[in-house]
Image 1 (cartoon, rainbow over the protein chains, first blue to last red):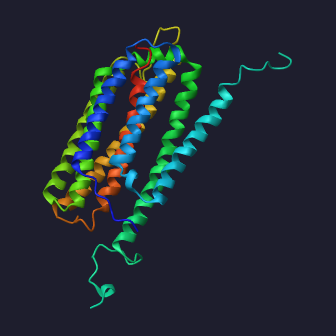
Image 2 (cartoon, each protein chain N blue to C red):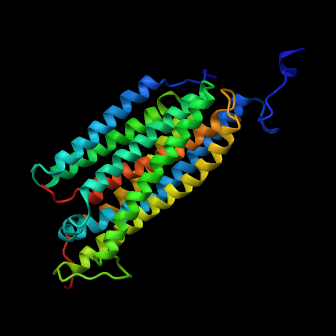
Image 3 (cartoon, helix red, strand yellow):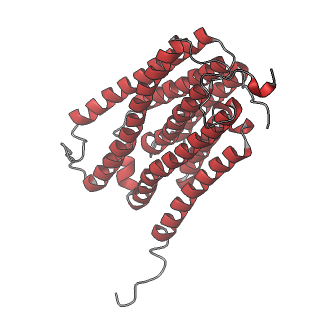
Length: 101
Length: 218
């Protein structure tokens, strides 16, 4: 079994600096005009980046055991399934006409 | 005296062979809990996504009712509390008991600031008649859509705030035991596991902030 890894304050300070910078960036981006889907795409991209930094470094997943990594990946996968299956309904409702109406 | 007869930690539960095994099993257990928490909030985020798609204009009008400055400030406060929590974990792992205690207290204080700001925000919503089911009033042609946005706003931030309150209570427990010096490098995983919970709640807010506060500002 791998030795228990201790993350140092230096790493934490670097990560929190990135998180603050990305928060400022997401507010700035919200006031710029990038055209219809792009403001949302960038906002979600920044949020995903922040979440990934927290999971990998603050929550130590970068150094954790394989079983833990598997649990994290499966959790995210199930969330993606929930969102994808639901939206595959709502996004496609207007595609085909309703017979008889 | 053989290695196996070595005096073991009083914190070792009898059903584990070693502290290392105990740490590893409880870490996986905590992640299973976080995974179901993700499913729980996932339902709310799915509801948000569906109605955001159906009511794009109402959501922009609803979002305009929220205060970006307070929301942004709270985002920074919560991120800072995640940092102090991470530092608390480091202090527990390296046996710095005083630092651990102060970092936990700092995390508690930042959590309190977050909830205080949330109280100010909720009070303003009540004052402006924006609480569905309580006093919602709007003469906008999109009143129904704005109402749905506000309902989701309260459901999502309210559930998030409830998690903060639970975390607050747990922190008091850990501060009490940290003050008594219970946590050592060998027995640091209770702090690590609580850290996982705290960071998860932080991640939820990382998504709530842009999704609720920052719509239609361009």
